[in-house]
Length: 130
Image (cartoon, rainbow, N blue to C red):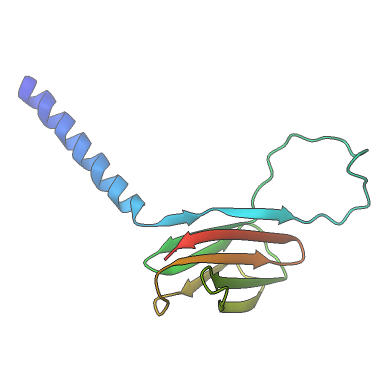
């Protein structure tokens, strides 16, 4: 009975380890910024809400490829990637009504980069190592 229990625990530990290693290969890029609202309400007199703001875009880095997925359809989105050390724009592209975008950064040197996702309604920035 002890051997059976040991084998069961060992199998579960191995399975969990294999699953977590598969998940660790990709990295989520934390995006921060503004969700622009076009309304004529004074922030001082506006009602205070405590609801969760759903982020309209998520970015992931996996093997020097950035994948960006959008939660809502936007008419036009601009993606800009700059290198921190030189402040040089290494990628800039405008997309019309995107749902997912992949940006291949295999030709770039290692270092820290910034990503900016902007449209009429949002402006998100994030930092990631390459």
